Length: 324
Ligand SMILES: *[C@@H]1O[C@H](CO)[C@@H](O)[C@H](O)[C@H]1NC(C)=O
Ligand SMILES: *[C@@H]1O[C@H](CO)[C@@H](O)[C@H](O)[C@H]1NC(C)=O
Image (cartoon, rainbow, N blue to C red):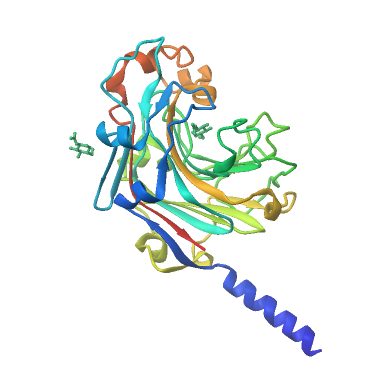
């Protein structure tokens, strides 16, 4: 009897505490240079990109830090030789990796322009780039990812084993695919489209961005988007030392464990911010041309010959915070 009451009590307590997290890492400005690494690696998705190392990025001002500002940008001055390397850009990854946690990005501006394929996401970085995405145990393209300025944002989960999502879920976004297993769905993953255009690209930049937050537990993954000009949970926007996701309302995307063993599908993930051009997804010509982009992205002529069109291909990030 006592044991039972205790078990019930204990489970109530653990549920009550489950949504409360403490700040573990507050990445702001200069500390992106010491606690994240620039990765000068080939792009496994075949983008027309040349990721540079930190020294080069700083020397060329592709990476710039000051106060609470981190800028990551693409080269917007060089016309490329079509037989040479791709457009210089930056890919950074957190040195630390995380299992269950909440991560938040406070973003003021994200890369925009034809052929741009920016992403803020998490994966097991130790599996990269060997074998590309397919061989990754599971990756979580949970936050900002899109191509060619096409809004709204899609939040997608990719897993390395059987995992699917119910079509009806408590979320404000709209599912675009229910099969998360990269082995059976051609690596499309299970995506959810945000309900508003200001979640991505030029409309997001017009309102000076906002916040994306992702909560990963052993039972579910939730993603919220809060535009800067709207109501935002104060603990989330202020960078409070502790947060309670129970107060954040219905998530934009909700990935429950109904038909997916979330607890075992994901290992410790690093956080990655990257910006590539064209490549296996952005280069899909239908998306490219329907976005009103000129020429043929797959042919990469646009990326080679139009440096000035990359003037707004930059991230301006106020902070990335991780709570555990
Ligand atoms: C950049 O991010 C995208 C996810 O949007 C990923 O598919 C691509 O492979 C990444 N490229 C690199 C080199 O990290
Ligand atoms: C580097 O980029 C920052 C941010 O865009 C800008 O404020 C600064 O003037 C640039 N520095 C140089 C030397 O161009």
